[in-house]
Length: 362
Image 1 (cartoon, rainbow, N blue to C red):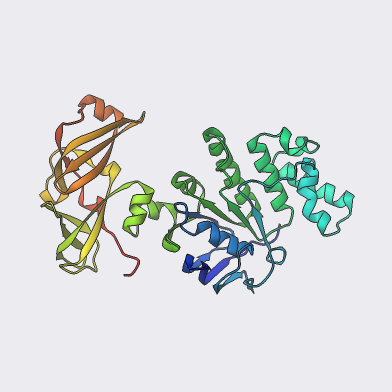
Image 2 (cartoon, one colour):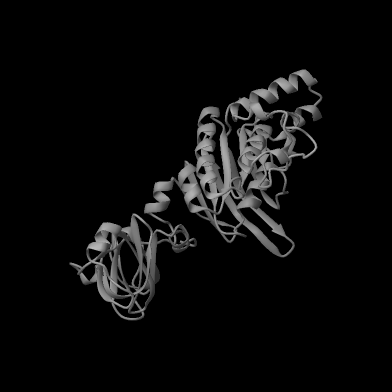
C-alpha cells in the first residue's frame, strides 16, 4: 500500500445557491489516523468528505493531500478512494469483476487485475465469494466487496460515507472491529462519516464533531467524551447534562452560574466574566443520589422517567429552572434503594465533574 497521507483542509466553504453547507472549515488529519466526522443530518460532514474526494467542488478554500494541493484535481488523480453508503456494486458483474473494475478502466491486463482483485478479497476475507454476484451476498459481505474495490486503487486515504448505516446492530459491531483492524494493518488514513456517537468513539483516533457546517470540536475520543468543548457537543454526545444561566462569580479557574429558577452551580474553567451567559456540563454517570456537600454541587429533583438498561438505570429529573436532568446509576445501587416516578430526591456531584463550556465565537 502507498504511504499514508495527511489531509489538510484550509478554510473550506461549500455553498449551494443561497445555502451554506460548510462554513470556512479548517482541519488537519494526521497521516495514518482514523478520523470520524460526526454530527446530525445536514451538519456538513458528507459535503466535507465529498470535497476531499473531489465529488463536490469547493466554493472557496483548499484541500491538501500530503504535499499536493488537490483542490482542482479530479477524483482519480487525488490518491483517495471513496466507499459509498449504498456500496454501488454492479449487479451484472461477479465479485472479482466488481473489485477489478477500476483496473479494467485503466487498461490493466485481465490476468493481472484478476490476481490483484483476489489479493484484495483475501484481505477482506471474501476470496471464496469471488464468483458470486452482489445479489447473492449479505449486507456485510457486500460491504467487504466495496472495501476491496476501494482499496485496489492503492489509495493514500480511504473515505467512507456512513459505511455501516445499512447493517443490523450485531453486524455493525462486528464490522466496526473489522474496519479498525484493516486500517491498522494497512496504515493508511481513514476518514469516516457517521451520525453514530458510539461508532465514532469505537473507531476513531480523532473525532470531529460538526454542526451547522462548522467544526465544534476536533479531539481524541476521550477528550470529546470527558471535556466537550461546547454545549452542542455535550448535548450531542449525550454523556453530559447542560445547564444554562448567567455568570454570577468568576475566578481564573472556575465560575458560578446562576439559574433562572433560582440556585447557582459552580464549575471548573476560567475566561468568563460576571454577567455573561454561560453553559456548564455535568457528567451523567457521575451524578449520585444523595445530599451534596456543597449546595453549588447539587439540587433536589423530581423523578420524571426511569429507564432500565441492564447494567445501568437512566433516571430523568426536573428541578428549579431545570426541565431535564439525567443520572446514570448502576443497577445494583438502584435496586438496593429503588425510587419511583414522582419521588423527590437529592442529587449531587463532585466539583471536577462540572465544567464551564466554551463557545464557537470565543
